[in-house]
Amino acid sequence: MSLIQLLRVTKEYRLGRTTVHALRGIDLSFERGEFAALWGPSGSGKSSLLNLVGLVDVPTSGRVILDGRDTAGLDDGERAGLRNRQIGIVFQSFNLISVLTALENVMLPLTLAGTSSATARHAALLRLGQVGLEGQAHQRPDQLSGGQRQRVAIARALVTDPLVVIADEPTANLDAATGHQIIELMRSLNRSQSVTFVFSTHDPRLLDAVDRLIRISDGRIVDAKEAAA
Amino acid sequence: MISLTIALRSVWKNRRRSLATLLSIAVGFTAINLFSGYIQDTYTGLRRTAIHYEGLGHVTLAKPGFFERGGVNPAKYIISRDELQRLRRLIEAQPEVQLTTPLLGVSGLVSNGKISTIFIADGEEPESSARLRALPGEDRIWQQDSLDPRRSSSGLVSTGLAALLGVEAGGSATLLSTTLEGQTNALDLDVLGTWDTGNSATNDKLLRLPLDYVQRLLDTEGASRLVVLLHPEASADAFRARLAPLLKEAGIEAEMRTWEELSVFYRQVKNLFDLIFLFLFTIVFIVVLMGIVNTLTMSVMERVREIGTLRAIGMRRTGILRLFALEGGVLGLLGCAAGVAFTFAIGSIINGSGLAYTPPSSSSPVPLTVAILPVQMLVLMGLLSFVSMLAACIPARRAAQLEIVDALGHV
Ligand SMILES: Nc1ncnc2c1ncn2[C@@H]1O[C@H](COP(=O)(O)OP(=O)(O)OP(=O)(O)O)[C@@H](O)[C@H]1O
Ligand SMILES: [Mg+2]
Image 1: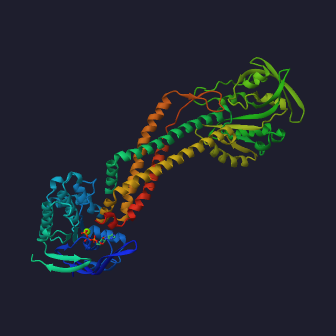
Image 2: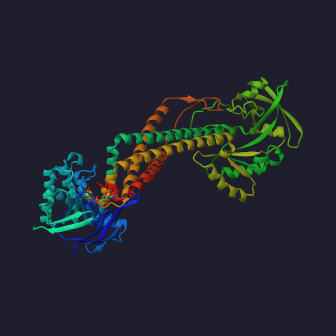
Image 3: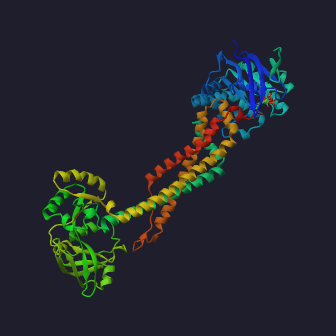
């Protein structure tokens, strides 16, 4: 059984009187431990697709099945609970909480889940270590560089041991070298911890490392290739 | 609690804006406290005036109907000597009672031989009346003389009336009235002294006369009212409620009025002050409400992306609501805390300054003081913080209703 399954998923946005067809019938599944990239031009539907996988948004039609569970009937609170425990999200512009330290940011998903602060702290420090930021634990986001912030965000996404980490253009706000390092970090975490990653990019130079490349254009998957690991 | 941490730090992060909101809450809080401290002190003063200086005691008893119609037909409402004795014995046996003193009202003409004018007076028992009128545990603020128990034909004349008649201490006048039977009666009065009633409406009419003098004038051995003074902590209403069944049991028919019901002046002042207080409170309430809504609306608008992020990593809508409600509560609480400091500072400056002022319809200045009321401050603090929290819910609800995708912004 696949970790994540999308069945004939569509997504439409209403803009006044016109309807934007962002996704036009997607059938797609992801397996445990995958390192997959969504690639396509701007407006092709990458973000829309990742939002559905991350339970941040609901499809207009079709089904999103997470670990064998159909997410269609879930209410808002249940979806929040699933996002909290089973999904890790890395954003394009890092999206750290500015008033919290790096450590507190990483602890946050666990705190929201009701984990005791000692346990949360321990787990967060471990993750900060894995992204190479144990020394920056007590700094606020505005004291960190872009690359460091994105590492904190990755640690935050990993801290609950989620089923999948989704990352929508995680390198778009970083310079090329730093972007590369971030992808490398994700790749090594994928290898060493078997974390499942699905990220999107429109930068073809970042695609060397991926197991699987999903090309999307105008809301449709145009070609999926399995790369040799 | 992480929400509290975020709320506190967000308040601090925007400290310039927070400070403006805090100050407006603090000023409102201080205004309410100082004003209610002032009226509290005024009420305390007026209460003393009514109970002791006006001689209303805590509770006054009379025959049923006396308070409405006693002026027209005094004979009908006379408490006989025997009844009065029984009544006093019963009441003085109650633990909260300090003393009782009977009164017998009279009105008529007073003459200096050349001119006559109307007077009203209460005949009072000199000893018990003097004890009623003595202020407990304080220097006497009011200059007032007492009747002389050894001189049963001497009374006190209000200063306005004395001036009208051209009499002074040591002089004499003649009082003219009708007995309860309806016969005209006249008695001479030695003027023991004069006193200022403190009220321009009565200062040219009032006399204070010994009870047995008035009894002779009206040809009766009874009284029309019995005034009861309680110990300072006792409540007049509670005492009345407790006494009513005892009176019934003893077969005594009597109606009771508390000093609050009898003192028109107290009620007028209290009604006015209470109204002003309500007005002030409403204004502060609105200022706090609008300040918080305004501040939190800005806070929500600036943090839409943060809201989206929190929701995306699993915070529920109620969590967002709580986050901003807490922020409002924190602002309210801090504002009130600053207000407590202001109240103590300004309050002690006022109380230490020795300021005095002459209140309307009073004939001498009284010290301007404000009571510092810690319990009331705590209650107000809780109330305003709660209001702040509720006010914050208006923008917070909007924040909680945001769709995550919209909040994150579609980039
Ligand atoms: N919230 C929205 N409201 C209206 N239209 C939207 C919304 N989000 C996306 N769209 C539209 O849906 C289509 C797909 O957008 P999407 O953001 O998924 O593409 P993308 O591949 O992520 O593009 P980009 O590379 O620019 O991020 C676009 O035409 C976009 O304008
Ligand atoms: Mg996108």
